[in-house]
Structures are given as C-alpha cells and as structure tokens.
Amino acid sequence: MKDVILWAGAGQIGLAIARRIGYGKKIIVGDKKIENAKAMAEIMNSAGFDVTPIEMDLSSRESILNMITEGQKYGEIAMLISAAGVSPSQAPIETILKVDLYGTAVLLEEVGKVIKEGGVGVHISSQSGWRMPQLGNEADELLATKPTEELLSLDMLKPENIKDTLHAYQMAKRCNEKRVMYEACKWGKKGARLNDIAPGIIVTPLAVDEFNGPRGDFYKNMFAKCPAGRPGTADEVANVAEILMGPAGAFFSGSTILMDGGATASYYYGDLRPEQ
Image (cartoon, one colour):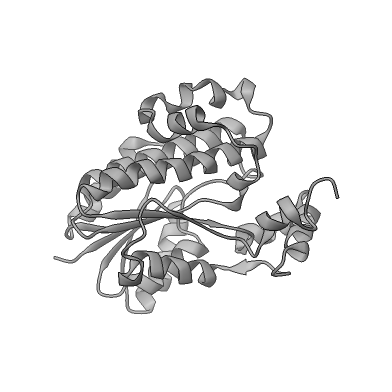
C-alpha cells in the first residue's frame, strides 16, 4: 500500500505540483474530460510516476466520492491537489458557481473526512477573488461555513445578483479561500493541513486561449503593467505548493498565498488602478 495523492483537474498547474510531490506515491488524476486525465497520466507514467486517470466531475458529489474510493484502493489519502475549475470565458454563471464554488467546497469537505494524519492539501484559487469589494464578516462567514448543499441558495449567489461570468468567478474564488480557512480547522482535528494558492496570470494552454480571445488585451495589459512585467509559469506555482505541502510549510494551515507578480498591488495602488 502507498500514500495516495488525489489530483483534481488535469491541467498544467496540477501537473507541475504532482511532479514535485508525487514520487513514491500513488496518484489518482481526475478530470471531467477523461482524455485530459489520460494525457497527464501518460506524461507522468513515462517519467516514472504511478498515476491512474479517472473521469471526475467536480460539480458532482457522487463523482468526487468515486474518485476518493478509487484512491483508497491503493492506500490512505495523504495529499490533495485541488486544481479543477472553469474560467469566466469557458462557462455560464450557473456552471461557474456549480463547479468552482460548490464543487470545490464539496471536494475539500469530502477529502477532509478521509485525509490521513499528517496529510496535506492545496487548493488553487485566483488573484481574481482579490479584485472585488470586501463582502463583510457576515457574508464571509456564510461562504465559509454554510452547509455545502445550501451554498448555492445564498442570496448573494443567486444568478440575478451576479452581474456576469467574471463576477461569478470572483465570488467563487473568494468563497474558495474562506472555505479553505473553515475546512483547515476541521482537517486540523485529524492532524492534517490545508492551504490555498491564489495565482495571477499563469501561462497554460487555457491562458494562451484567453490571450488570443476577446479579453486578450485586458490580460496582456495586466501582466505588462504589473511589477513583475510578465505572466507566471506553472512551475512557479509548484514552487509555492512544494513549500506548503512539505516540512518547510508545517506551520501553514488555512492560509492563502497570493502570487500574481504584484498585479493585485498594482490594481489598488499602481499602474493597473481602474481609474487610470
């Protein structure tokens, strides 16, 4: 039997993290598109890792539980890489809320029930959740603690109160970060840790599509004017995940690390301020 890593979302960021922490462990990679999971498994297995692909729909509790059950065939669940989701240009409001917000909350909840002592998880949110007005303590607490099956019934998440897909995405990512804090308290009772990384623009196939899409100029302007003057790479996100998930990060739990090349700082206080 091996320690098992559950990896949700077969993309470049998850791949970079899995390569850092996955040696000697059994990895289950789940994605709604099984061909994506199979492609990642092939890359990893060809490099000496032990990876099994599975179809996994983040918006379905049953599908998440199936992934957990698959992992438990090989050993105890020791790590979670939560990197699944859809972007504002990929899906309508309802889908973004169902996948990114509700689905992530369910994943963190269900893995928290089975994570082994000493286990650790990392969720990938986004700088986007930092680009909206503060919601206030009451709203934050609801996003953090509302039972998962009641989350989407909150007034603030009803479609008529969501302006557009970007607003839905921002709300989802804000919720993710609050949910990580809440779940980290529960994971802690089992001797496990959970943290969040909020990346800025990271070059992936999806991001390249965005650069060439209708919002391309917006994204290019953002990374050109941020203090770093460039987009980031998946391996830079993996640098942070490796610390958070390893011995060097043992005192991190319930934290969000914003790593966006300074774009959020610039949005509030620099060249990316909206009025400019």
